[in-house]
Amino acid sequence: MDLVAIQQMLGNWTVSSTTRCVRPSATFVEDACPRAVASTLAELGGKDTTS
View 1 (cartoon, rainbow, N blue to C red):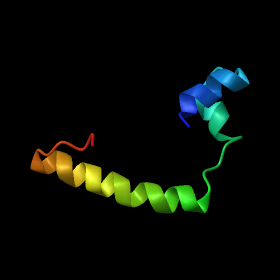
View 2: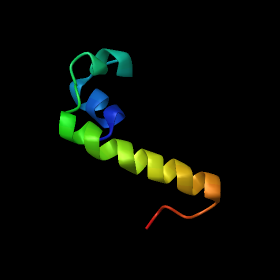
View 3: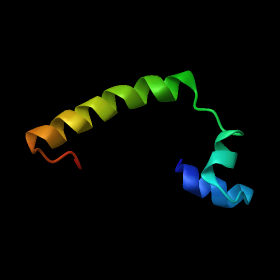
């Protein structure tokens, strides 16, 4: 879920105050890292990653 959406739902003024309450799970981090690397490599190569 988008961190800014969580910030608004909790009524926090800043994202930094929200990050004190929210921690990603290990599974989320493990899944996000390969996607981020693939996306970055695709952008550097000029390929579309929206599919």
